[in-house]
Image (cartoon, rainbow over all chains, first blue to last red; front, side, top):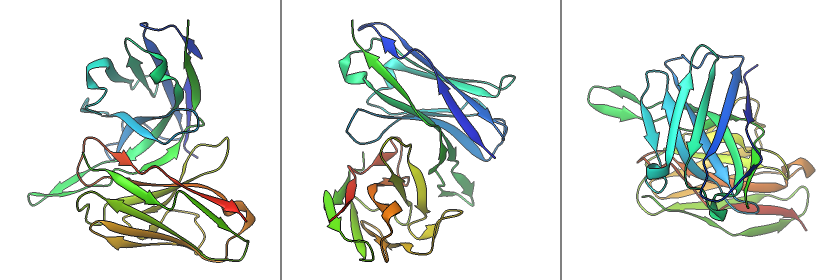
Length: 129
Length: 108
């Protein structure tokens, strides 16, 4: 059974860097059929996609966060990570990792499958001094 | 960026009733739409992908329909475990992948 587990500091100071890791069990992050993504949810608010990565190294970022975000993966540990720099109180949120389908290309047409399933349990990160 | 708008914000219903949730895209997303359920204190769970295909293990009382810019999630005969917040997500034109603001289904 596929499981994802986020880990990282629960408290980060303003202007510092938020670093999170998602450990994947029950599937290999080297599967060509999936991306691995991060989504966040400020307390009491909606969902915001942050970034995704494919085992080939292809990365995809939300333009609104791109200048501050880096996503990476470690196939030897079957995990992927998120770094968000220069954090402010607006970055306080529950951060989820999730498996994401990929977009297939055939005959010059794109066939997206980029929904998220399953999700990790989430980890609350608070930005405060 | 494709903006997803969900309505209503809150739906108050009794067990056994039918819930009809709407999701509108600011431009066509064809059928590239997913629905998620989130219960308090839990992470979102995939219900529907491709606008109308139920994910593994999702009961038949959940159904999705629509294409282009207008989509509907219908929950027939609401059960107590169905109360929560429902989100739609488009994956047609990205980045960014975008979610709607959610519809809360609460017990009347």
